[in-house]
Each structure stands twice: as structure tokens, then as C-alpha cells.
Image (cartoon, rainbow over all chains, first blue to last red; front, side, top):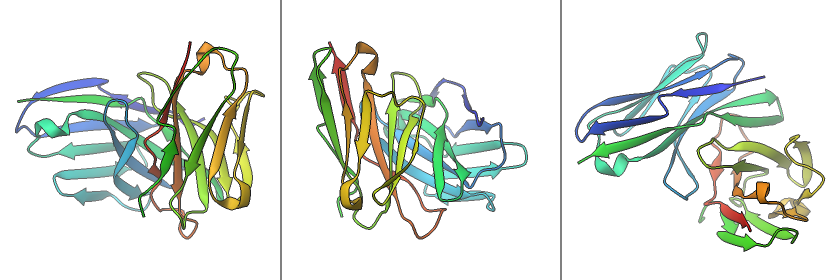
Length: 114
Length: 115
């Protein structure tokens, strides 16, 4: 059974710092990995999708990497801003082709201190 | 295209009542998913539709839960005889059929509180 872990559960950093969020998964047989942002009481906003054949993806100040063989992904946020405060979730797509689903970690709650 | 839409956003119900939630996916997406998220946890898979066919149901989906997707368009999730343990955020997501590596897009969720 695929298990996804995110450490730390919570992180506070001063505004302007660069930071890294970690995600690990137990089974390397994934189709892709997706990073999401969730604001309190809200739904999920997709940030980045990395296919299993890719090593990284970038969008603005965000860079996500994937090392499928070791079961790890990182989300790098450059020059953090108070608006980046949210919970960040990673999810891997698993399952039989045509019947796939996302398995999520429990998230990292990020607070950017002004 | 306004993305995935879920209604209602919030629902408070008394224990034992039935509730129904609706999800309207992105129009060209044929894959639709329901997830449940409790406080401090990541979303957990409940069920999956490809067009109108319900292809997988999680063990989390007890007999009190039923989901439909008539004509492969919108979907409904019904919970009968609600229990306090059903209190959670219910999230709907959709994705395209054309490529397995397309993103899943989520709605804003329906927050259910059973009192």
C-alpha cells in the first residue's frame, strides 16, 4: 500500500527566506506527483505536476523535484512572502491504468512571518 | 470555464438526517473523484467515475454512502443516516481522459458538520 509522508508537519520562516518542503512515498510505481496548496477551509489549488519520467518542474518562485527511485520529492519556494502561508500537500497518482487515484500526504502547514 | 464547482459550500445537519452534495466537473473532463478530508489530515480517496461508470469505491465508503454520475456530467454524493464521524470536508476533483499525466483539479469542497 502506498504511503506518503510529509515532514515537517509545520514550518515557520521569516519573510524573504528560501525554503524546502519534503515529501516521501513508499512505492516508486507512480504515474506522477502533484503539489497542492490549501488555504484554511478551502479546496486544493494545484501548484505543480511532475510526471514520473521528469526530474523537476518550475513555476515562478516554485520548483519541484522528483527522485522516483528513492521515493522523494521536494518543493522549493524562493523569496517567501506572507501570502505563501498555507498548507502544502503532495500527492502521488497510483493504481491500475484507467483506474488511477491520488494518494495524499498529511501536509506541511507553512507560516511566513512578516 | 469556472473550474470544478461544489454545492453547497457548507452543510450543518442533525445526526440521522440524509444529506446530498453536488459536484460539477470541468466540462471536458471525463474522470471525477470524491475525497474526504478531516482536520489535520490529507484527503482520502472515496470513489472514482469514468464518464458515468463508478469504477472504484474505497472501503471508507460505507453502505450509507452512495455516489452517482448520471450521463457522465455532474455527480452527487449522498450520505444517509449521518453520524458525527461523517463530519469532514468533502472534495471533488476532475481530470481529463486524454492523458494520464494531466492535473487533477479540485473544487472548493463541501464542509459537513453533523451535530
